[in-house]
Each structure stands twice: as structure tokens, then as C-alpha cells.
Length: 318
Image (cartoon, rainbow, N blue to C red; front, side, top):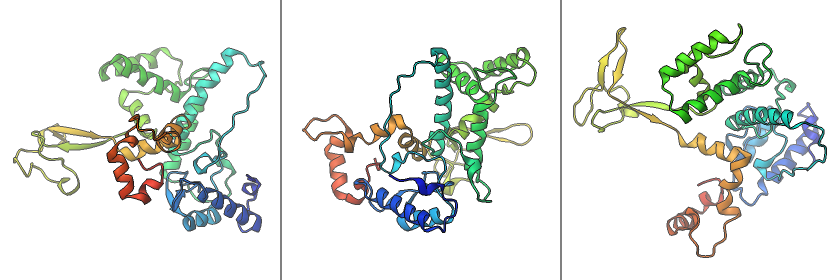
């Protein structure tokens, strides 16, 4: 498909408008699309579903996402070209793989499907929102040396790998704080080692791996959220919401539920190249031969599809 229209900066130009219409025709012609597609406007970044008129308005007013080169979220198939060039050493290749994995992880978390950062090419004066600001900050951290002269480990990859080791080996939060303090002592001055486990953990929130804390009744009667967000005692058993008050007046709840929202997790599964195909397999690869190999083969799933044909027509609705 012709993408030369993306290089036209004047969005009033008829060639740009025609190119945008051709893109929309292509996207809405896909068999899995019903009435909405992911919007490739540079701040939506393929994380918001919109009607055709909404997507067209964004493309004409605000422009196409510069980093979205392969339109795999809109039906384009990425073809990998094999090369016989073996001049690159295995060691250099291994280093680049790790760097690419970290960068791709960031793009997956924020909705980009291409690992190029072309944010400087934009001609708009619009300030990036918090979502985009965090994205560019993480990209910067992925390219920042852990300490001056460190070529193999970036600020971000150090944090990600260290927290991974913590999970694998069941390190306590206290031991992590001690280890980070030791790293700060032995590494050269000017290193970007976090000061504490809490500081390192905040990075995971920016990567979309955070959670929401919801206070809970000590007897599991109530969750203190929505209409009960400001309630001080359980409306069912009457027990106080709080265990005690710390010095300084901070209240501590008896129990805390950590809620991991499902929507961003599903969005990430569809954004990542490795998992998006598997998430679509029940529509694109499954064979109805009477064998129960996937939940979509069950009677309940099929009954739901029959009752809600509009919902089931979009293969990303699971």
C-alpha cells in the first residue's frame, strides 16, 4: 500500500486527504472490523477505538502517528526479509537483541508497534499529554547509560532486570533497599541506580504494570471504593476501616486489595507482535472439528456469540 502521503506535512493537500481516505478504506475493509478501528492519531497511538468519521477528523486535524510504520493493527502483514550478511558478530547481535527487547517492551506498553522514535518530526505545537510524556521519558531511560562509560546496561534495563531477579529469588523489599544502597557505593559517581526499591518500582507503573490499591473490610464484607470510597466503617459488620494511625496522622487500612485492571493488559496482548497472533487464533486459526481445544469451542462461548453478533464480529473482543 502506498504510504508516500504520510510525508506530506500539509494536511490540506489533496494528496494527503486521498491517502488518508485510502487508508481508512483499507482498514475498514478488513473482515474483522465492524464500525470502529484503532485510531492512529499520534496521541491516541492505537489505544482508542473510534468510528470512521472520528479517525478521519483526527488524521486531517492532527496527523498520523509518525512511528506507526507497519499497519499490522489495521490488516497489514509484516514480511520479514532474511539476509545473508553475517558480518555482525554474535556478541554485538546479543547486545542489540536486549536493547531491542527493552525498546519494544516500551512501545508495546504505550501502543506503538514500531521501534523508531520520530517524535521530533512533528510540526504541531501541541504539548504531549502525560501518557506520551511518560513514553518518551522511558525511551530516554532505555538509551541512558547506567553510569558514564557503561555500554552494555542502560538505566531502564538495569531496573527491569534487577526487579526480575527479585521476583525469581523472592528477595525482600528490605534486602533490595540494601542491595541498591551497596550499588550506589561501588559504582562510579553519576550512576542512575535508584535510591530505593520504591523508586525502582515506580518505573513498572509507567510501563503499564501498576495496580490500584482498594481498602477492604477486615472481614471481607466490603471494598471501600465507588460509593463506599469515603466510608470509615464497614456498612455490614460495623468494623472500623482502619487498623491504626501512624505518626503524622496517616491511616492504615486493615486490608488492601490490589486491583490489576484487565483492559490495559488485554490491549498490551494485542499490541505485542509475539502475542497478538495468538490472541486472534480463536478466529483466524481455530478449526471447528468438534474438539474442545480453546474456550471459543465451548457451548457457552458459541451461545454468547450467537446472542451478541455485533460484539463477537470484532475478533479482539474476548
